Length: 580
Picture 1 (spheres, rainbow, N blue to C red):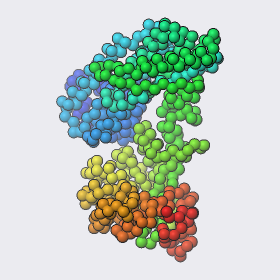
Picture 2 (cartoon, helix red, strand yellow):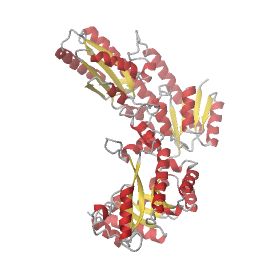
Picture 3 (tube, one colour):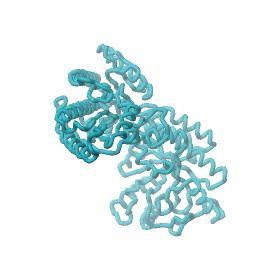
Picture 4 (cartoon, helix red, strand yellow):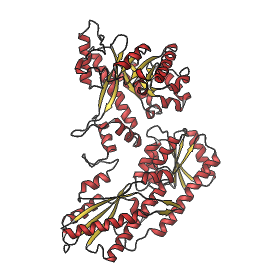
């Protein structure tokens, strides 16, 4: 019997799906969390997975990533279910390996047709694999069968191949990459993307056999392997009778022929595909293969062979990340009134990894919840430390992600951390991105109201004029003006009109305003004229380490009888940060 796995934390919706499937003679498995769903998929290998995008532990994207990275589940079709029927969510789902996409509310006949379509496609692909996937003399190093394709070569076996290469007078390692694999999966589904890899593997084996028969590379030994994702490798080794120069020439000619052959259009399931193939020759080195096929999970040693996702996971677990703090300044008094906590990742001996690089990795690999928890806890601990030292009574602005806000345990965990650090919620500004609130206004209103009732201030980050009409419905304390409206404000008349409208409405609703990304004195002057309450930006100070921020607070306290003395952004500042 065909088995279908439903992953959804909405028990009512999961029951509706399950009942409909059972009535149509399908067996069902059910999971309420992403990790439970991944485990069930690996244990039972269902014929289809139906997965909600919003799950309490990891997102549907994280589920997709884990299913696609495991050889047992990599080819299982996945239908994503979501409340957000936007082109961006659709595209992101398909790029991550989804085969279909359904938006709530879901009509059951549409749901069942989608199920039947994916099962029919899987059956057709299975027939195709059965016809094309059996090389005459299979071996661990050959490419072609479906099982070998989805099971990347063991690095221990490849290490033996590399040792043999090093003993040859001339050898090379080719990396063969299908560079548009992600686009193919996004346009046609993950299973067809896998089929494209299968076809390329078969082409590689046929090319090797044909070229050796023709004698073009008869003096070269070619071994092929699939190393995962969108990459294959070829081990090219010259015979002892071949001079190094001749071996290199034969290799270049063989590579040119292969490049031309693999670039030809292929037809799969009535779709004409144009593969984008890149071949790169390099010195035989096991480290190259480890980087290509580094795991996302597992107990592997530290070092450059680890993927960015695994290194981030360990950095969170080992408290190796760092918070920086950017001062927030009151425009009327010049006092530092708050700090925004910003996460940074500095790996020893390597350039700093920017948030724009590792935040998407965290989102795709189910790490946003532990990362967000680390940020909140670290920011609260730092604020508690400053309070113990009797520094200025500043507020702490902490950014929240959609993963935290959708977690049913978030508020309970937040209050537990508040209690553990003895910090009052009134000292915390919780910053939420504007786009997140607009996705589900009714749910956002309930959540913000609950957080406000606990004593937190709610700030809308990157605020733009598109949300003005919703302010009367949302319990909000602070609007953080998007830096795109602040940049060159002194000479952009349109932005001045928009910012003035935001300031006027905010004052009428008793909402504070803070301008983000202030870099010039002219921008600051206009903001003062428009009666903006506070600012942060490079004009006053960049984000600082905890120690440098503490030094800045101490210096400001010494310069005035009152702690948090006024500091004018028009004069050189402590720590050498002068206005620009």
